[in-house]
Amino acid sequence: MPAVLAIADYDLPTRSASGFLLRWIAPRMGPVTLFSIFDRKLPFRLLAPPADVIVGMGHGDPDIFTGQNGTIILEVGEYDPKEVNGKVIKLLACQCGVELCQDMVSNGAICSMGYKDDYVWIVDADLASTPWSDKMAAACLMPVVNGLNSLLDGEEAQEALGTELISYSINAEAEEDELIRSCIEFNRKNAVLFGNGGARIKARPDISLPFPPPPLLIPLSA
Image (cartoon, rainbow, N blue to C red; front, side, top):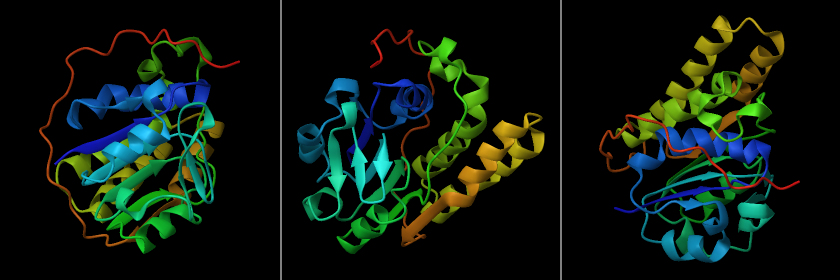
């Protein structure tokens, strides 16, 4: 079945997170990625209905998930239920676990995972063109990658979230920087799942790129 990977890339936080998803998740989710200027409502509306899994990364509020340049992708009371019905959904965005994730389950999503507060991490701005090489950001973002890969391996959603949580714990225990460790622990505390934790998607091939993508040269917003 098709999959939807919708990832913004217009400021430093979205550039950082999109880099990790491009490096380790995009190769497993099929040929079409809604990246950068393509991460908007109309393409999402067209591609989402037949998909079994949606992974989104952008900015969020309790009731809103946004794409490129803050354009609204999903908003409570404003989306077509066909966009979420029958799907496993993961949103890497601030606060969507407060209201939007629950609303999507109420509108037919099998399960939805998000965060009930801001998602926080430390970014090395000097690595904006190769964000996947940012070791400070990796302390928080690689647990998300590990959880998504577990989901794409065909594991249950609750098991995939468990993989993410365990990865946070391992990274926090090994982290010497107090600020980074506090970010890891904060994200771990706020990760939530609504709906059927036993949900699975069709396993995707275990594809990994032997080399990282070329440097990202798209200018960031001021």
